[in-house]
Image (cartoon, rainbow, N blue to C red; front, top):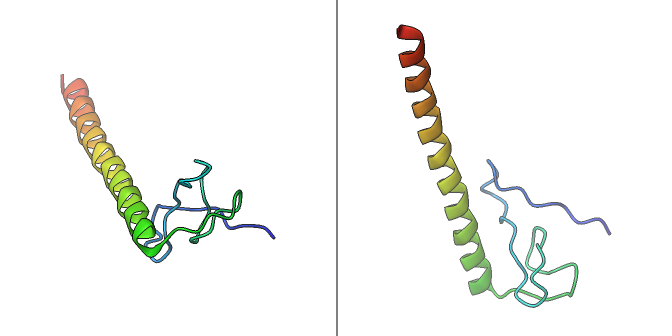
Length: 80
């Protein structure tokens, strides 16, 4: 059985990936680890989902700040 790889960007209807608490490897979509068959409870799934949403939002903020700084830098560079 081939597992679907997790994606975070733009797919809010799917659960993001999680690290398995038992084997510490990256899990795929869903509550069961394909490596050790560990099953995440609903509370653990929600914690993992919040964690990865925070990671995604942090990356969005960093990208936005970088983009704005790059625009200002090039504007200043070419306006001289």
